[in-house]
Every structure is written in C-alpha cells, then in structure tokens.
Length: 105
Figure 1 (spheres, rainbow, N blue to C red):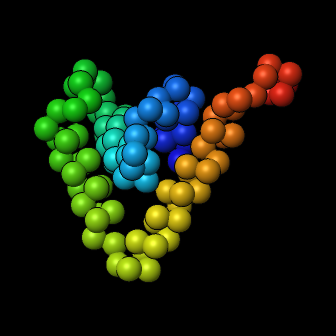
Figure 2 (cartoon, rainbow, N blue to C red; figure 1 turned 135 degrees about the vertical axis):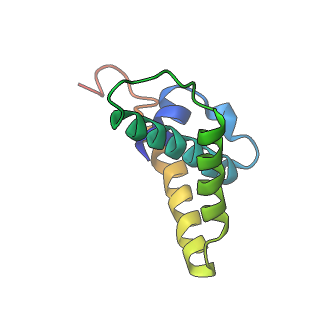
C-alpha cells in the first residue's frame, strides 16, 4: 500500500487513476510489486548491475502479479476490491495530501 500511496498521491499522479480508479490501482500494485521483486532480487547479487526496470524479466513479474489478481475467487475478488477501495479512500490522507505544514508537525 505504501508504494501505491507514494506513486499516486505523494507524487501527485492522481490523474493516472482516470475513469477506472480501482483498475488503475490494480496496475499500480502490479508495478510496485514488480519493482519490489527487482530490488529484492538485486540485493542478493554480490555486484549490483544496472538493469532498467521494465526489462523482460520484470515485465513477466508484472504480468504474473496482475494474472494472480485476475484469478482470484469470488470471495477473494470482493475482498481485493474492498482493499483497493480502502486505498482509494485513505490514500490521500496517508500521503499527507491536503495537509498544511502545521498539520504534519
């Protein structure tokens, strides 16, 4: 959730959510999951090599994550949609959107 909140609200990319915000959040979660997988994988390598995110391997991880979301059972899908809606509802407050400097101190 932290990665999604950072990408969408902290970095001011609310327009990315468009007309289908729950679907957009699902894809952001896939991207964040792929990036996390990439970072964890690089930490196990003795010599870190620069492999730009978006390479074939990471694209496959993104597709794997989104496929898992699409393969949820009815009850799981309902729970997942509720979680996405929760992120949509609390995301701005988690990112401090709308806070003044005195609010965050």
